[in-house]
Length: 248
Image (cartoon, rainbow, N blue to C red; front, side, top):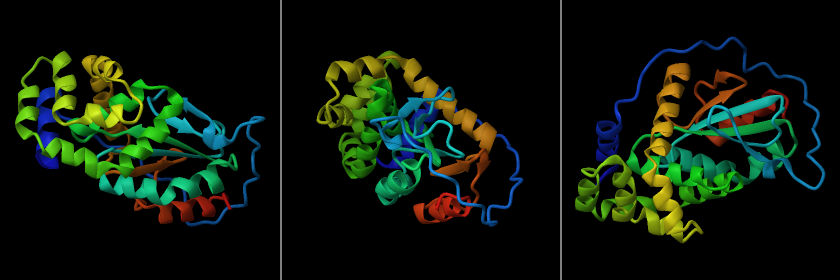
């Protein structure tokens, strides 16, 4: 099974994603700003180890009051998102988040059933496990795709089941359950998470909301201090933007 049919299966079972417009940028991102002072983390803890869930359904790493706030819309089956994760992993934490100047909120932007299931399982776990599991999924995308492609017939059969049975069966057919079990998530936790269709529906609703508010057309998309960072989809470009904004 290829990635294209996965998207079709999700849309046919959960409804098409909405499309709408959004506001325009009102600042000059090229104008260099004054250096922002560092903000000390709580005693005994680093900002990159400070993680919370936001009201908009995202997961925020860093100082909640950071003067530079990044929202990343990411898909777990997006190769460009995986590349961003690999390139930014250490540097964004060390040089930007741990200074207290920058926070990073990740919101899942769902493209296909494999993406939706992986995101749901991660989100069903403890808040402090969200980023480590996400980074591991990005680093292991090839394994996820291989599992889904190896059993197309099992996937098709699972999609014919009622919603509460569909995604646990699909996870088993595509070996997603084994993938997460090898990373410390129990079979019972996976089945309970994916058996609750609300966990999948909330992800779709969040994706719809992102499209409506920001006109997201691809992943990763970054929103910096409330404005879409047009033309920025790699760590190098985002790093340069942050430095220009005073995180240097």
